[in-house]
Amino acid sequence: MTVHEEELLRRIRELEKRNGYLNQQLKEHRYGLTWIDVPEAFEKASENKIPILEEVKDKSFTDGREKPTHILIEGDNYHALTCLQYTHKGKIDVIYIDPPYNTGSDGFTYKDKRILTEYPDGTPVPKDHPLRHSYWLSFMHKRLELAKNLLSDDGVIFISINEEEYAQLKLLCDSIFKENNYITTITIKVRHEDRILKGDKPVHETTELLLMYQKSSSFRIQKRTKDNSRPTGYKYRITELINNPKIIDLGGKRVSVFHPGEYKIEECEESFDNLKKINIRGSIKAGNSSGRFHMAYLEDRRNDYNVLYKVPDIGEDGLGHRYFLSRKDSRQANGSYFQGSPLSRQDLKEIPYPNFYDFEPEFNTVGQEGGVPFGGGKKPIAFIEQLLKIYTNKSSFTVLDFFAGSGSTGHCILNMNSSGGNRRFILVQTPELTYEIKNGKKVPKKGAIDVFVAGYERIVDVTYQRCKNVMQGYTNAKGKKIDGLGGSLKYYRTAFTGTGNPLRDPIMLPSDEDRISLAKNAGVLVSLAENTLYEIVKNDYYQIFTNNHGKFSAVYLQEDFKKFEDFRQEIEKLGGNVTVYVFSWSNNPDGANAFMHLPNVDVKSYPNAILDAYKSALQQIESPK
Image (tube, rainbow, N blue to C red):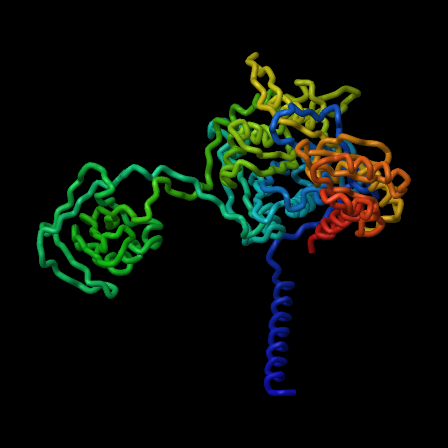
């Protein structure tokens, strides 16, 4: 072994030793969030079956105009998010969710797979339950892991929450999205300080919180713009009254010193030809070169009152110098400096977004937005629109809300599109009942009284009705007719396919029968993945979809190829670009040679890609360690 090889080996052993020590320290002194993982008991129809989506055609509609087609999915959002792993992985730009806050009275329920008889009637998890936080964290962990996969590299997620689970949610999101992708927590004022909900509490809550994370460093937040075209504050002129001021050395600079009577400061009409006075306080002390120079060399001279210092080679206004003025007397806390208009000044100035917003008036009047009532937690569209403005000023992007509730996110997107744009929404809502049965009678659930009285039996009906109202028009509670904003909606429902063999996981270890069953029933998933949402042909052997703009997707549903020639002939009739999906036991599409003479046709295998997408996502959801 050469000397060089021995040195490399020594370094490798040293690194291994160092990493071993670090890993041991992390095990012994772990920082982070831990909880007892509580498996969910999903609906029996889903156990050991493969989730898919089916279109509910009598609830889908289109206005035929050049508007985006939006998507509403009815079903448990865990199943819906699993389906979206295949159809929309990496395609979502923004996620906004308003999950249950786990207050003990907000309706959050959890069906524990290990304790099936604990809450058979869907009673909310009480605040004093020993596994209360574990229930909630298990519930959120699974869904956020799936949601992360759907975000594009430059995508963001906003999550509304209150103080009950904020600390836990922050640590959970740090783990899932990584701490370096945390952007901010925004405080939202939602009610007036005198509008007290619970008088027995010593502290009245007037605000909620909103977490914001980026998917990766590819996201660049665009600051808001402010009018910078007016010379506000540029009203000072300084005249030197002597030609031979005292010169001192400060930080390697020859600084001219003017005492009272040796200079004159005048206030004039505002103009960019004048100077602006900046008080040196707060973050300015260290935030720019002038503040840092003052603190390093002039702060010690603060008791030399009304002294003017002319410092050369500082500032970005092209003057070649900057004037600093010491405080006028002992009662004044700080000194000042005078700057000219920066050479790089633009008429529009970029400034950061605040992390506090007052939406109390909007939350107080949100009740009848969209023509549907809602028990509690309804978010005003102005609030969601502000979040989307923080995300981007683009007019085309896709938003996902998988706790859709009253449909505020959808309403917001439709409202924004009314001024131009092609923003799209995907909403997911569990069909939660707004009532429960007591003594053989329907009784409104707590928090859903308004919905129940209005005749809606499921929360998802409220979501759907609001989307329909806003798109097609409605009459509000005051009898005023509200014009529709236009748009098309595709309504889907989660469903399940496969053999349901209790001894076999159909995703991790699918049988041939599971693959065949999936292939026969997953045409809608292909249409969503290809964004060709409009079905034009359907029979037992194949489906064909279009986007109505010259793009098609075609799916051969069977492992039996006896109708494949008919399928091929249908494809030949289509103009535009066609993506053909053909059943295959492998990832190489069978029957691809049948379309080699058609340059507009791309052939893909089916359905293994769906299973692979599901498997990859579900493997990612590991029990917390």
